[in-house]
Length: 202
Image 1 (tube, helix red, strand yellow):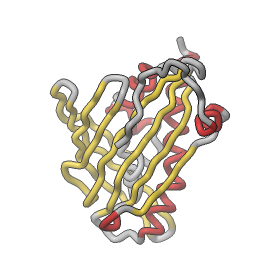
Image 2 (cartoon, one colour):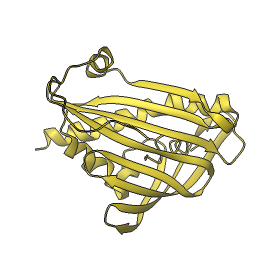
Image 3 (spheres, helix red, strand yellow):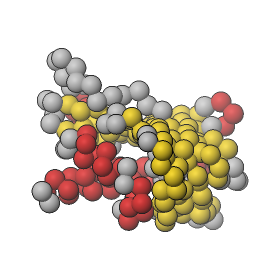
């Protein structure tokens, strides 16, 4: 995607190395950042890593239990139906907590538009983390994770996406950064809506 493709850069490939967990702290205090997330803000940060790798982190609050978020994000065959820019997502192989999936997506700006492909190894840690890394595809580096932190006080789940991305095709770094900064909020919002709409259908 150059991003979802860089998301696969971002999300596209949706999977997509965080360090949060679903463990509840005794006090379950809410930081100023979490208060912003509860108020509807989406936080996206980008960083330039070594060897021209781009680090991207996105955070959002979803008013639901981690199990519902988990169900939506691990429904790999259905991701293409609600994730922006994703055109294909298939589960190829399943061995317990390890999965192999393929995804394609198309995004970009102006003349820098591309359809990208990735084959990912996905490792699941139930209700805690969905870790992913490219096996083959259009990136030199594409790896990361989704993590989930439940807050009893907020009665919802803080979701974090973190990835390291380096395209294996021509894409100026400023373009890659722009696309990720633009597309990741839309991806996170789509996931939030999908999860919270499932609450209403119950």
